[in-house]
Length: 165
Length: 421
Image 1 (cartoon, rainbow over the protein chains, first blue to last red):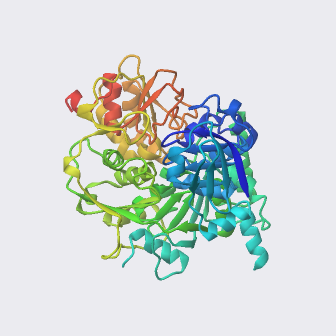
Image 2 (image 1 turned 30 degrees about the vertical axis):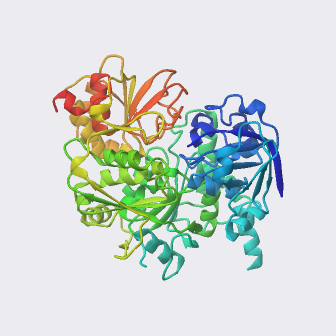
Image 3 (image 1 turned 90 degrees about the vertical axis):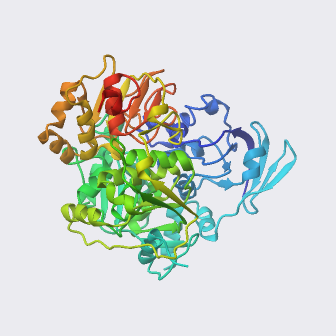
């Protein structure tokens, strides 16, 4: 599985309140949530983002609330992968559970800039910045999480487990 | 190498003699929680399951508290979805308006969580129950759905930071000040993926409500959970509120910690977190002249009876500064009633504050106290992110009930000492 797209870049501690503000949480429709994605720190994101694009940020991405609406909004906006130095733990779980690919990679998160064209190979964890010609090795997921990701989410994974038993 | 308190609880719930940091385990759950924002997403996810049942109708708690009383039609639809689900599956612990409260104040009060439990909740402040010596942590809606069906959740066993608390807090210094001080010290990702284990002689000088406030904000340091030892105060709280059997776990003497931090509670001052991160802390003597428009006293962090008593002590016989809006929201119906019987509500109203029904509304900028562009609030809540309480150009200053109440009187960020208290 591969991803390729243009980078949207953010800094440290991007919280779930700016990813999707609470005033829009009276909806749980992915399309409606996507229309408001990142609105409080990057009003123009929803106009710029194209299917397949990649989000890159620094440390502690997705901190704050447990709202699954945050990864849902990002995924529904067309983003194919989020790369960050570190993720807040609930966001990390939620992204895996809903099948939004995320990769932790300190160097890539620091060096990749907004507008760069970036390619990601999920099987190898290799991140390639075509604009800069630089390559990074993202951290591989533990086997257990890979299984959830391959099943496209936790619920499919649990369903497949109950098939086997 | 021994285990931390958290690791021992997780090992017991995974049926293992021993676990170590980084290990992936599947643990049995004692309680699964959701609210009106997160449960509808979980209920929708549950439709994808082949199994159409819940693991235990007594071990699920559903608390519509965020946008309730329903703030608009969409919120009403969400609450309806939760209500219908609760009826269909005969969920014992569904709390309708009139019997509800803010979830993290309500569950301990209803006796649904006790020491030694493993609890997941689709709300980040689920970590609050660590005050009782339970392992509790926030998850998303899909984890909640899986938990409701299977009664299990996967965890990566966390490593821990040990906080050794000594001494006695000075007058007007509360659990809120202690946790803000800690977050200021270690940062909003200072405990990322880890447990914050609080130990030491100083704990006996912290009330249960102080401890709830501290465990509640462990997430603001990125932690998986915050946890306190089970002492006499915790046992007496559980005996008063619950009929459930509790289990006391203690960290091994040779447990491994990533870091050990010692804090003398007697040296701390009232502490405020400036916009836009809980780590931007300053002590009250260093805040400068910050004029304010709104004061919010309440929330899952600081809406308990001790918090209201402290606020009332400061507001008693005084008047809110002209032009400042003060909103007090007791965290549960029981606390509301108690505050009424103790005369605290009268004190608030006479001072010029409004008293609201329990709701998460103002804390997350949902309803009941939204800020306009350029406005500033002092709040006893837990987050001060950009746009948290309203307009992106508004500001939230996080503080204790004592500081919030004093600020309401002076119209600027102030400690109670400024009023001669």
